[in-house]
Image (cartoon, rainbow, N blue to C red; front, side, top):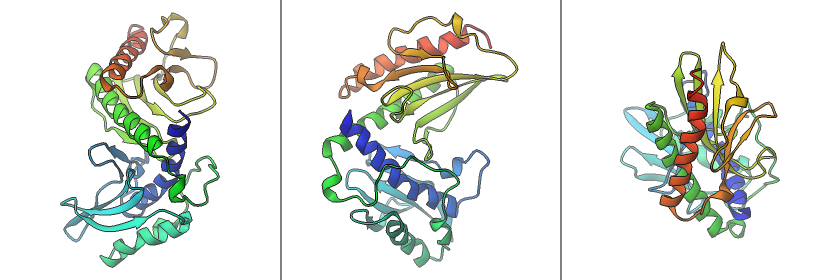
Length: 268
């Protein structure tokens, strides 16, 4: 998983440009969802949100396969391409700002710092030989798997939610409000000290009542983590094949059903 985690950190670092661009051109939302992203496995692109301007629509995307940014129009035509190699973050932002300025969009907000900080990955610039093709393939595979798993989670709970990547913690996640006082979050998280590696998570959030974690049964795959500030269930990526979508989806579906039922049977 070393190659995957390295690529995850590189893409997370670059994704801040997408978050800043979203923030620069879109109305602010209280939950910060105007800054979040989506991974499109069809095109292999990490995309921002649509920006409407003068009866036209454009959006910025990071082509993960080619490792460059692209400004796209409403016909999915590429209007500008920006290389990321051998550039500082400030230089990338400057190059990204050129196209929107050319069509009359004020781009100065792109350069403002975000209201959150991501970990210091010690990335100053990315050279072409820093990119690992196997890492990109693994990253694309697991983010596609996360999209599909989120759909399965929403279908299981008969809920609706956007499947998005949040630029702060960089998880592909969804949230379902099960009842007025109880909801469940699900997604794919980056490697951290809690799990020791990247993992799928499922966690319940209750208001006005308390979740009794002692009543939760063990999981066939995955484990409950209940001894810290965050409580929930995790399925680490080393439990999956990393190459067979059908097999991996089956394991994740079992994880979703068992973990979600642990909460639902408490009738929160």
